[in-house]
Amino acid sequence: MVRAEHKSLALILTRDLASNLATPLFIVDPEGTLVFYNEPAEAVLGKRYAEAGELSADDWSGAMFDPQDETGRTMRPREMPLGIALSEHRPAHGRMSITGLDGLRRTIEVTAFPLFARSNEVAGAVAIFWEDRGDAPE
Amino acid sequence: MRGKIWGCRGSLATPGPDTVRYGGNTSCVELRMRDDTLIILDAGTGLRPLGVKRAHSMPSRIHILLTHLHMDHLEGLGFFAPVWDPNIELHVWGPPSPTHSLGERIERYFSPPLFPVQLSDVPSRPVFHDADGAWEIGAARVSACSISHSGPTVGYRIEESGCALAYMPDHEPMRGKDPRTVEPEWLSGHEIAQGADILLHDSQYTAEEYEERVGWGHSSFEHVVAFGQVSAVERLIMFHHDPMHTDDELDKKLAYARTLWGGDGPENAYEGMEFEL
Ligand SMILES: [Zn+2]
Ligand SMILES: [Zn+2]
Image (cartoon, rainbow over all chains, first blue to last red; front, side):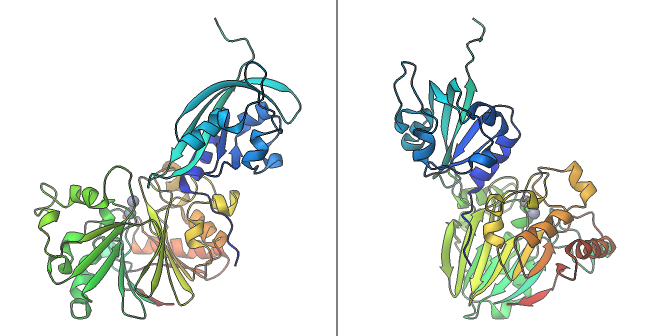
C-alpha cells in the first residue's frame, strides 16, 4: 500500500487556523513546498488554491510570482521573508511586489516565521501578508 | 498480539450501578506480543487491576506508552504494583515537549501535595522516553505521531507480523467538521489509523453534546465512524466513553454508530474485552 504524504500536526492546525482567518496566510512545509494558502490569500495571489495546488519552492519563489524588491530588483528565494524564515529559522519582514496568477502586479508587506513542532524541529513556515494599496492612513 | 481492555471510561473514573457492563475505569489497555513483551497503553485507573490480576505473569521489563498526561491517563501509575518493585525495569513513553522532559512533567503529579511520594523515590526507578517517530519494543514495531487533542498528545500504532493496532483514546480529528471533508493526508491521526486491523478511538460525545464542545479535543459518534471509514480500518472499537453515559445509553450509541457505518463494524469497548490480531 502506498501511503499518502501525511502532514504534521503543526501544519494541519496551521491550515485550520488559516481557514478561519480573514488575513492572507501562505503555508510551506519543511522543504519549502507550498502546501496551502487561504481564501484571503487567493484574492492577492490571483488564483484559488484548489486550482494552484502544491507548488515547489522553486516554482512559487521564482518566475511564477516574479517577486521584486522596492527598487524593482528580482528577489532571490533566500532574500524573501518566507525563505529567510525557513532557511535561517527566524522571523523576517519585508515589502515587495509580486505578479498574481491573474497577471496583476501588487505590492505586499510580508511577515514570515518558522513553525517549530513539539520536539523542536521545523515543521514548516508561515507567511502572513497584506496588500499595500497605497491608501494606508498617514 | 493479544490485547485486553482494563479501562475505557473517559475523563473520570465512573464506578456505580449505571456503568457495570462497560466499566468505570479510565484508559488502560494491555498488549502482549508473541515474544511475551508487555506493552501497556495509558496508565488510567484500569492499570491498578491489571497489576493485581497479572501479578503472576508480570515480565521483569514493562513498557507503558502514554498518549498524553491528562489525569485520566496517568493517575493509575502510582497504584500499579510493579512500580514499587525494585526488580522491575519500567520504561515510560510519552509525548515530547521542547521545554520539559517527560519525567519532569509526570513529576508534577507524582509528588506532594498531589501524591504522597516523590517520583525520584520510586523503587522501580522508571526510565522516561520521548515517543517520537518509530522504534522497536521486543517483537513490536511502535510508531507515535502527534494528534489533535488539547495539549501535547500522541496516537500509537503497534505492529507485529503484519497486523496493526491503532490507539487514539483522546482525539478530535477535525475541529467542528466531518473528517471526510478534508484530504486524508491533512487529517490528524490518519497516518496512525490507516488500514489498521483494530482502531481504538475516542467516542466521547453525541452530536448534540459535541456542538457545545467543539475544540475540547474529543469526537462525536458521527466523527468516529467517519474517521474509521476514511482510515479503512478493519475493526472500530469505540473507546473513552463519557462519564455521563450509562450502559443503556452506550447500547443506543452503538446501535446508532452501526446505522451510520452501514453494518456491524463498530463495537463498544468494555472493561475485560479481549482481542487478538
Ligand atoms: Zn482522556
Ligand atoms: Zn485528554
